[in-house]
Each structure stands twice: as C-alpha cells, then as structure tokens.
Image 1: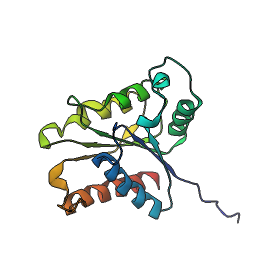
Image 2: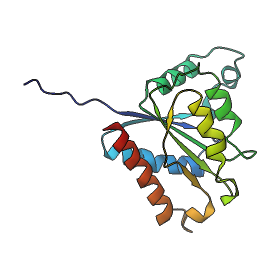
Image 3: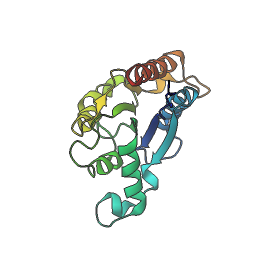
Length: 177
C-alpha cells in the first residue's frame, strides 16, 4: 500500500497594527506558537512594513504582491488588529481591499482584535468577519477579542486569554483534520 505523504498546513498572520509589539501581535504569536507545535508552517506579514504607495494602489510592488499571494496560498489566515474607530485599522482595510472576489474561498480565517475595554467586543462580528466572509473565507467560531483585563501585571496572558487561544487552535485543528 502506498504511503500517504503528510500535507503541509500553512498559517499566515496578517498584522494590522501600525506599531510593533502590539497586544494583537502578542496574541497572534501565542496562536502561531501553538500551531507550530502541531506541525504547522507559520508566517507573518507586518502590514506597517509594506510600501504605502502600493497598499494605496498608487504603484505596484513585488513585496505587496508576494504578501497577497502568500495569503491566498495559506490554509489559515489570521487577521490581527487593534480596534481603531470601532473597527479594524486602515492598514487591514487597504490590504484586504486588494483581493478579488472569492480570493479566500476554502480558507479558514481567525480574527484577533484588541481594544481598551469590552465595549467594542462585537467589532469582530460587525467588522472583520464580514470583510473576510465577503472574500469567501470561513470565519472560525472561536475568534479572539482581548483587552487589558486579559493580561497579567507582568504582561503575560491570563488564564482566560490562554483559554481563548487554546479553543481557537483546537477549532482549527478539528476543521483541518
């Protein structure tokens, strides 16, 4: 009987914060670390590092084209952003506006969003989820919205945030296997 070759699972994180080391980036890294421990290949796209003229469609860029192609090739797309104006950042908007209709068909999407309080906890449901659904992605049920109450004083995630990360990764594993 021929042996089945293991299929490589790829997750790509798209970071929409204009600042490095943001809370949304830290949560994303927890998810990526967990996925890597389960055999996933993981990659990160820092939108703030991409050429702004190309993000605004004023010019072409091989770097932006490569980032778009990487997202389309992934099995799981993680979108991570702080809350800006009660939704996701403009960086996230201009990047995902470049995809054609149904470009994420068959992809799983895990929105991760951070905010200053629980007040905007539904922004994932009213902002990021519809955006990636409009591109054909299947949005996970276990999305992650976190704020200051989800972190310990030393900056580490508390048990609730760790549990949210675990649930999201378990859902991904269930849907992919």
